[in-house]
Structure formats: C-alpha cells, structure tokens
Length: 482
Image (cartoon, rainbow, N blue to C red; front, side):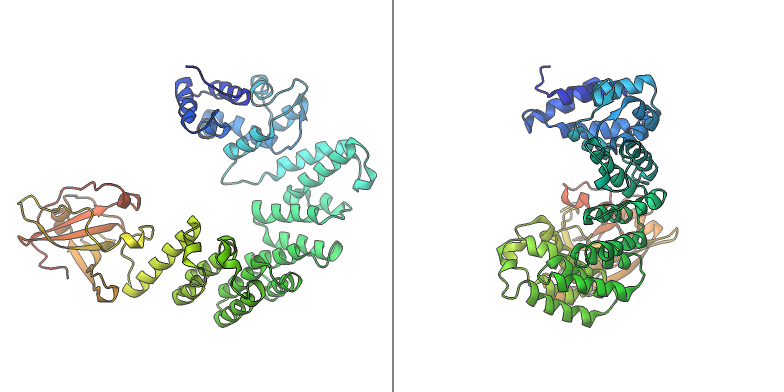
C-alpha cells in the first residue's frame, strides 16, 4: 500500500510496531487519514501511541520515556540511560526511531509534545523528581547562582536549571530560593508549576508574593494569581480580595481580572457585592457595549465565567441577567457560548418544574415536542394516545420511583407527577428484569386500548441516535400517569 508519510511518521510507526502494535491496524489508521490530511498529519498517530504505550508490558518504557521528554534540549546518551534506566534495546529504539543521535539524543519538538501527552501519568501528572534530576544535570554544566555569572553555553544550562528547579516542587525549593532571580518569568514558571501540576496553592501564592516584593510591585499578573491561589487554597480570603482589587487598579479594563473578582464574590455568597461589582466592571471594561458586540472574545473571557458561577450557586435569574448582556448573534458564533445557553435554559427548566427530567445535554429546543422512542402503534395494533417524558428517581428491590411530566407546549402548564411502580409492574412495562439506574431518562406511553409502555434510554448520547426500543408489554396495574 503506497503511503505519503513523513520521515518522522515513518520512524514513529517503526517504534509502534517494535512496541507491539499491529502493522495492519497501524497502516489502516494512517491510510484513512489521507481522506483528511495531505500528507497524513503527525497527530494521526496519537491514538495508536496512546493505546500502545498504555499497555501493561510497556509501562516501564512509558514512564522512563516521559521523564526524558521533560527535557527541552538534547541529552547525552549516558544521561538518558541514568534518567530512564532503559535497557540497550530501549535505548536503541529511542535514539533510532523516537529520537536521533548516537552520543546525544535529540527528539523533534513536535514529537516531544505529542509523546508528552501520550505518556503522561494522569493520576500523578507532576514529575518533580525527574525535574530535580534534570536540574542536577544542568547545574553541573553552569556552576552559577545568577545568569550574570554564566558564559556561553553556561547561560542555556543556567536557564534550564532554573526551569527544572521551578518544576521540582518541595525537593527543589531550597536550591531555587538560593538563586538570584531578577525576571518575573522565573517566578511565574515556578508558581504555575506549583499551582497547576502539584496543586500546592499556598506555595504558588507565596511565589507570586515574592515576585511582587522582590521584582515588580506593579506586576498585575502576579497580583491576580496571588488572589486566585489564595482563593483555591481557601486561605486569607481578605488578602485574596485585596489582590484581585489591586490587579484591577493596575489594569482596570482587563476582563479577566474583573471577572475573577466577581466570581470570587459569588463563591463567597456575597451576592449583592457581586452584582454591584458586575455593574462597576461593565463601566470599566465595556462602558458603551461595543466590545461585546464585536465578537465572542469578551463574552468568552468574562460573561461565560460569571454566568457559570451564578449557576453553580443556583442563582438562575442572576445568571440570566448576565447572559442577556451577550447579543444573540454573538452567542451563535462560538460553541462554548451555545453550550452556555443550553446550560442556562436547562437550569431554568429545572427551576420551573422543580425537578430535572431531560438529561442536561439534550438540546432544550428538541424537548417536549414528540415521543422519540415509543412505538406509534403497540403490539395489539392500538395507536399511541399520550406520552410523557420522565426520569428514574430511585430503584430498590421492591419499587421503582419515577417522575414524569405532561408535555404541554406552554412551560407553565406542565404538571409534574411522581409515581412508585412495583418491580413486577416495571418488568411488564419495560420487558426487563434489571433495576434501572438512578436518573435514567424514560418515555411513558398511553395507548388507545388503555395499555401503557415504558422505554428506558440509558445514556444522553442515545437521545440523539435513532431509537433502539426494548421489549414492552401492557401495564394493567397503573391506571394513569397524569
């Protein structure tokens, strides 16, 4: 099969086969990409790399490879062996296929980034020990506490030492603190690693505070993330608010800092203060409403987060007020804003009914119009008379509790009915002996001959697919559902 592949692709394909991938499956994967890419994109191999590297027999190789991929520059072969503890065959695979070089192993940056995703340990994504070992490697080659003391290639090694110490967590803390750092970016690098990779929010806040005190008292980025990390740590709430407000004082029109203060106040249940701050930020950020009409950028970076925060606290009307500030044509320009509208409208429906019925992911505009999973005519030739959407509330060995709603067109006219069905009644209605899962969506149908049927829809995705009906029989013991 002739394939138009790059050299990088071909080498990775050889590596995949060496690690146990099926050549026919691999070739089919690459060939199918020709329908969408010309030539096939490098990332078409990502699913294969993910699948093969996660196999138990490749676990040691995956972990060792990930440690090496944390290095942003080539490493001597002996250093590679020390860091990864690879055997000679694994070293050969690395230097001849995944990377290149006999004495210094070099990995193309596109491949490095691709493999970092595929080798990441999702339950423990931070690799402070590996970063500390890499810092030690570069320390031996720079011999300096400050960049001014380094010369030539020493400068690169000094910069990489600082980077890896910044990501080395508690193990690298003392050495990192002993360095003479004069640029904000060094502090940001370590603080982000502590916050994002290691969830050490107080540690990150302390680094941002250092940056403010030692480098730049007007560093708006550090002020904002000082507040953010104190908030995430649930510590020093007053100091967190002061940090947010200082960021806004330094950069009044920035939507990110302004929005963060509002969501912080919402999170503290200070609803009136949040509303007041929302009105004030509109004057600072977009006083005449022109920015929000120009495209989705402002809504994505400001309104979206505030709406989400109000919804998380169950404040649906306040969420609607903020959402209404986004023009509807702008909402239609971005998927995330359309998802936000769906989330808001679903919350409004739940609030109006007092009960969730449809799964939240089902588009609101598709609800209540018709039954999608009930047969139009039952096994006795009787046509469907009425139908009701519903949800399983609870299922025990004796009864199944469900809630159903009358599907009137006008939302205010819908009636909510709660019923308990015996296991035997449930079996006859659904044709299944199994207990349903809580929150399973159902459709209940009443037919002209007086019989009832229940259809279970086991997942949100099924709602958007052609109906797959389970067996159903008449349920004689229930007279009416609504």
